[in-house]
Length: 374
Ligand SMILES: Nc1ncnc2c1ncn2[C@@H]1O[C@H](COP(=O)(O)OP(=O)(O)OP(=O)(O)O)[C@@H](O)[C@H]1O
Ligand SMILES: NC(=O)c1ccc[n+]([C@@H]2O[C@H](COP(=O)(O)O)[C@@H](O)[C@H]2O)c1
Image (cartoon, rainbow, N blue to C red; front, side, top):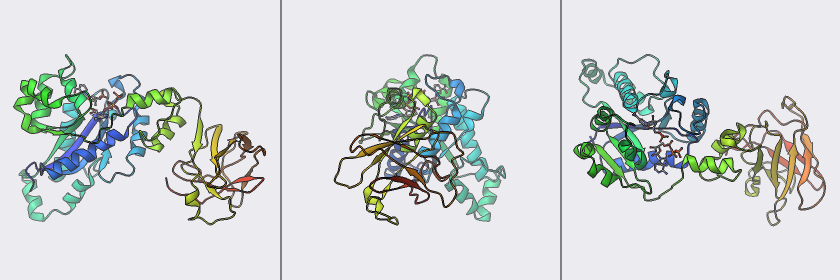
């Protein structure tokens, strides 16, 4: 067994919106712990804070949860705990760590709720279902040799917030650091090693603080994404496309009225049933609640992108009969934005699904089906 036992790493924060760095923290921390044999990471939890935390630009929890779900859809081991957001008000981090640790260990000792919470790490669920009867008996008797410790995963700025007068109580910090432990990821402008050295309490518990150097520094923050969004500038590649799509769709953080650009990937065409030499595939279209959708169409890989604007002329139910294909007829002015109308789009036209645009010299059509994942 590794020396630190089973660990669940939990990041508490606003996640308004989640960034790639929020996700990277988990990967970096897990690798570090495993390569140095400091413990066995059996799960990761993201715990968005309650709305009552009241931080600037904290959008309602249901939005932050929805964005986290989109951001984490490819993670096999990091889950979201909505627990804090479901409490009657803001919860101190010590209580959050304690609650999750207790719930996990109760589950492991068989005192579990028959309906385990959705955030319970899969490895914990599997661990329990693999229990030998003897081992289970030992656990039922209250002897849990390998209980799980929930550690607080944070950036070095959060560690340094421990020194902000009145923000954290000494008693809470003693419990968080002494009983749970910290996994701190480096962040520009912070010196966590020195910070620990200069705090008597942290220095005393320094063996319970794992300092992880992020050698591939990424200084993206939610603040920066919000700023770009507010200014109508691109935040692409700072967070997941689906998160940005959600932000635009719900006009969060002052996002301007939506014009969405879709890339047309010619190299994907080959994998689809080709109808004409000008077939193009749209990637990552979004829900059709937008009035204007900007679509880049590249007829031939060699020529400059042309764009057409597809307008929804009136409210429809957006359900397309199986056999139906709507026409988009652009004005024929080469290399200028072209206006076109789409009456209806297929019900499959949702985030994460691509729609095939079939084009020829005079008309463009949006075709049902042919979806490809993002
Ligand atoms: N670039 C980063 N490097 C290291 N840690 C980070 C980074 N961005 C966020 N974190 C950590 O992620 C956790 C959640 O932070 P939070 O939701 O406040 O993100 P943020 O991007 O710093 O937000 P904001 O910009 O709104 O203050 C914190 O522990 C924070 O230190
Ligand atoms: N006393 C405490 O327990 C305490 C104080 C400040 C922040 N926090 C937590 O730290 C996180 C900080 O998030 P932000 O970096 O987004 O402000 C939040 O989850 C918040 O609840 C806890």
